[in-house]
Structures are given as structure tokens and as C-alpha cells.
Length: 167
Image 1 (cartoon, helix red, strand yellow):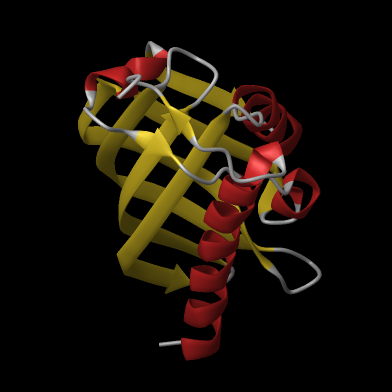
Image 2 (cartoon, helix red, strand yellow):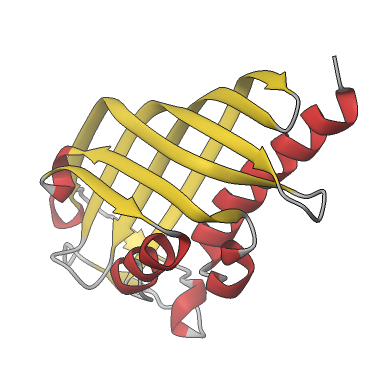
């Protein structure tokens, strides 16, 4: 097994997730092949969302995950098969989304990413396809959680102490 390629593929997936969570859209572009595809299978988004091309994927994420949306993605347990300059991988992941400007809602879920990777002419591995279908997903109006208080939000530039329940 090509251990160096295996580690590079892991790093490109981790970079993808970190860039989404930190809203680093320019850096995210380099994690994706120019003709990459994505399918995000989320019920809260109205069913599978499909995108073709790096620009379409990044534009969707940039326009959907503004400063009123806080995301945390955690992926692990990768199963990666490498075949020359292509590879396939399955990743277990969980995510949490706090929609602070949209009815103060939390979305929590899990799935398995099914990815394909390609090594470019520059030798760098990039995501050719990423996608998932939810194992589960739930929504919780944060105002329904007694005592819920958001005490920090990186995107507001300060650490607000906002009680959503008035308690």
C-alpha cells in the first residue's frame, strides 16, 4: 500500500472539513478537483443536493454557510483504497450545525461520506467526488432548550452571551 498517498488523501479530506467549518473558501477550492461533484443527502436541505464543478460546490457552501451558520464536522475511521492516481474512500462523520440567524435551530446528524479522489498533474491529491446519505438527522429549536445560552461565536467577532429562552 502507498502509505504516503494514503496520508495525503486523509489530509485533503480533513482540510475540506476544516475549510468548511472555518469558512475558508479560497483554501477549500484547492482541496477539490476542478470538475469535482458533490451530493449532500440532508433532509433539512430538502433532499439530496447535487453540484457539478468546484466553483458550484464552493459557491453553494459560501452562500449557504454564512456567518449565521456555525458548523462542526468530525470524520474518522477512513477506509481508503488506492489504485494508481485514483482512490475511493468511506468516512464515518458527525456534524452539528447551529443556525443562529434562522430561528435559532440546531441540526445534528451522522452519515458515511463516499468519496473519490484523483492525483493531479501537480502530484496533489484532490477530492473528485464527495457525498453522503444521512444515517440520522434531527433538528432542535434552541429556544426549546431550557437555559441554552450561546456564549461564543467566532463569526460575530465577540463572545455574545445571548439567552434564547429568556431564562
